Length: 337
Image (cartoon, rainbow, N blue to C red):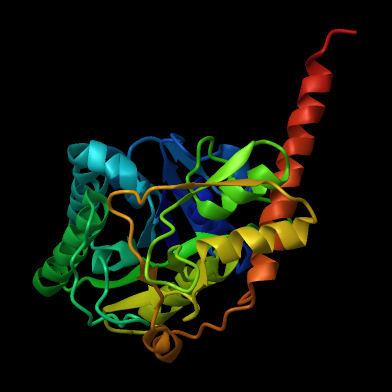
């Protein structure tokens, strides 16, 4: 049995591929490497460079590797970009998944794990937000993911497919062993930007919105360590293989930290100060988003290991310092003798 991971060379995908490979799973990856890195994959994992929307490519990989389950990460994830290019997001997120599901149905691959998002909730009426809360996305990014969830329900009803849709809250951190982490140039993740500021790569960090009705005026988010999220995918696969029914599950810790609290944690852990610039709210941003995690804890065999903001910051900072060291080493080696 082999697991096909689309987008498996990206940030969350590569951590999940590592978790699966470390557990002895047979894994194959399709990634167009637009934001992923082939070097992040274990040598034992075959990589097919291409588009997850390419039905011929996907069909060939499934047939030649005996794929029995798909974990689907490939897609676009930046909320402000989705407001500027909604059609691009509906193509990359919704239409790509439609093509992937079409192949899965034809090839009788009936286990599917989908990378969804808490953005499907929009601004929730209450927090922590449960899975049955109304879904009112405020961005094309959130809408594109919600459309895919609807499609999953319909395909499951028509073709007997079983799925787990994992609604991510704010993913952060890096592999504790510093093998992989977030390396995408221009990444918009708060913690990534903060550790870049702490390591001198940015002159400042912008805080968008200081007038929200929260304790310090900034947005509040539920941050989950990327390694814990990877383990949630591995546990979801085991759940489906054991006969589990389709499920939609929040992926967070059930506690929130404000943007300013996260910045202060980076300052504290790094021992370095850096400038903060306060700016207006951004369109599409959500005020407070904290997960109700009772369903995932009751459904999957999953116990988080890194439910601690300082641990998340420590791993993100160590990875950023490794990236800096590697770039400096490469620069020195490139200088002619």
